[in-house]
Image (cartoon, rainbow, N blue to C red; front, side, top):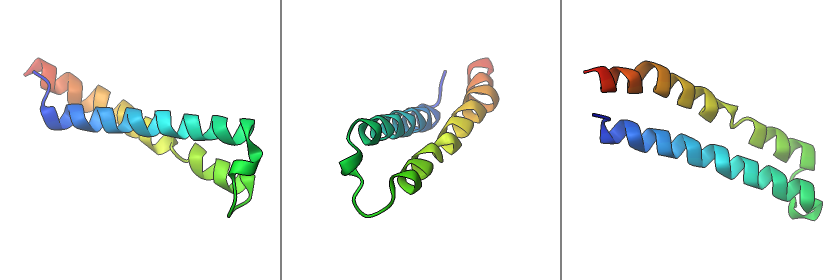
Length: 70
């Protein structure tokens, strides 16, 4: 059975990925939405969400498989 804490982490990483994608799309569709920083700096920070994708892969391959096999 999948541990509820692992399930919560998985949901959190997926939400972070979806949020960053949504923000990137918004900045591409509405460039005036970026106020304080340059658009490239802001978009670069959002692409940094790749860390959440990496964490999701590790969680799914190393921890969730183990949780199901126990």
